[in-house]
Amino acid sequence: MKLLTRTFLGMLLCLGQLSGQEARMKLILDTDIGDDIDDAWALAFVIAHKNFEPLGITVAHGNTPARAKMACKMLHLTGRSDIPVFVGRRTEQKDYSYQFTWAEDFAATRPASKSAADFIVEAVRQNPGQITLIAVGPLQNVADAVRKEPQLGKLVKRVVLMGGCVYGTADQAAPIAEYNVHSSTTDSQLVYGASLPLTIVPLDSTTHVKLSDAEREQLRKHSSPLTFALEALYRLWLEKPQSRMTLHDQLAVAETASPNTFFGKMETVPIWVDDKGFTRVDSQKGKPVRVCLEPKRNAFMKYYISELVGQRLGMKP
Ligand SMILES: [Ca+2]
Image 1 (cartoon, rainbow, N blue to C red):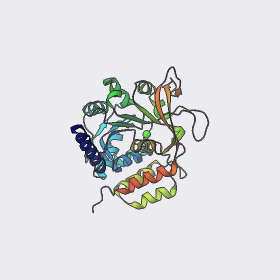
Image 2 (cartoon, rainbow, N blue to C red):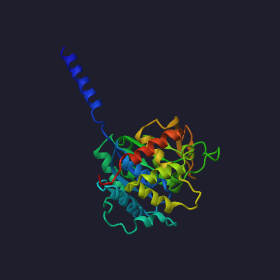
Image 3 (cartoon, rainbow, N blue to C red):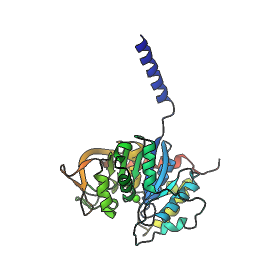
Image 4 (tube, helix red, strand yellow):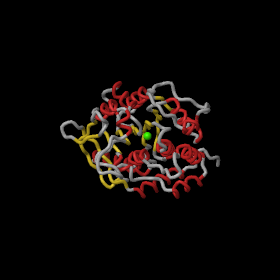
C-alpha cells in the first residue's frame, strides 16, 4: 500500500513537472562569428530561442578579440549582456572581415577575462551531464577544452558541430574537406577522436539550405534591434549582389533545439579526420558520430524565422 501511494505521488509529481514550465536547455555556443554570415545569424537564433539558457558564448579562430566584440555588441543590443563572452586562442588569419567594422568602436561591454577553453571546462564540471556544446567554427576551443579535461565527453550532455562532409554536397557527389574541420585539422582530429557524444550537421545537409529574398525581407521588416543587426551584417557580408546566405550554423542550432526534427535521415557512422581535413567513414579508425542528413528546408526555415521574430528583443514595450 505504502509503495502504491509512493508510486502514485511520484506520478503526480512527474505530471506536474511536465505540465509546468519545461526546464530550459543549458548550452554554450562556440563560434567564429565575423567571416561567413551564418554565425551572426546563428548567435541571434541562440539569443532569441525561448527554450535555451545560454551559459556563455565562446569565440574561436583567427582574430578572436574582434569576433568577441561582435558577440558582445549583439548581446548588448538585444538586452542580453548577462550572457558572458569568452575569447579563444588567437590564430593566424590573413583576411580582414568587413563585419568587424560593425563592432570596432563598441565599448559598452567587454568579454570575460577567462579563456574560452577554461570556461567550457569549468561550466561542464559545474553542470555535469547538463550542457550541450554547439560548435559552429574551427575547433580550437573544443580541442583545448579536451586537452584541459580529457573526461569532457563524460561531463557534457551533447556536442553538436556544424562541420564535415560525409558523402558530398548539394553541388557534387563526392566529399570535400569542410572549412571548420580543415582550418585546424590537428584540433579536429583530437575532437573527433575524443569519444564525445558527437552529432554533426555536415555540408551534405547545409548546402541545400539558402536564405530566400522573401525570407530576408520578412526579417528586415520586423524592425527589432536583433533583425536590424542581422540586416546590417548581411550587407557588410554581401560580396556580390547575387550572394545568398547558406544556413550552415543555424541548422546545428536547430538540431540542438529539437533533435531529429529537421532532418529526414539520421545515421550513426564511425568517423575520423584524415590529415587533409576530410571526415572519413572507417569502422576501424572512426568513433561513432551521429550525422544529420536530408534537411527539411521549409520546416526548418519556418521554425527559425518564427524564433527570430517571436521575441522583439531589446524593444521597449
Ligand atoms: Ca561558422
